Length: 69
Image (cartoon, rainbow, N blue to C red; front, top):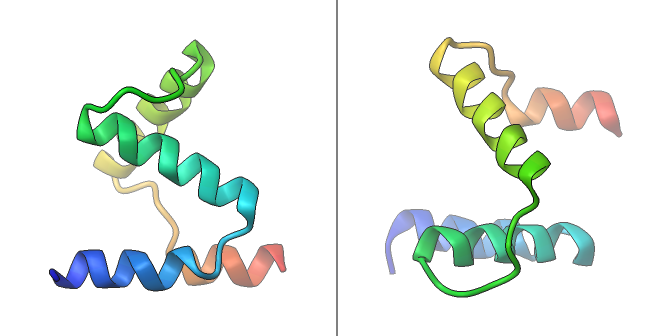
């Protein structure tokens, strides 16, 4: 198994059921499989996030996790 997939498995074990469902939906979308269709606002949120990442407006997950509890 690739390092990224190993890391994904480890992270998945720490997610809430609700967050895991979101990740599964996104993974199905990435894989081109049928799944729950994303709402237009969800596509917009993804586009905003991608744009922010491209311009360097990101924060490390550890920092976010530390500030949200």
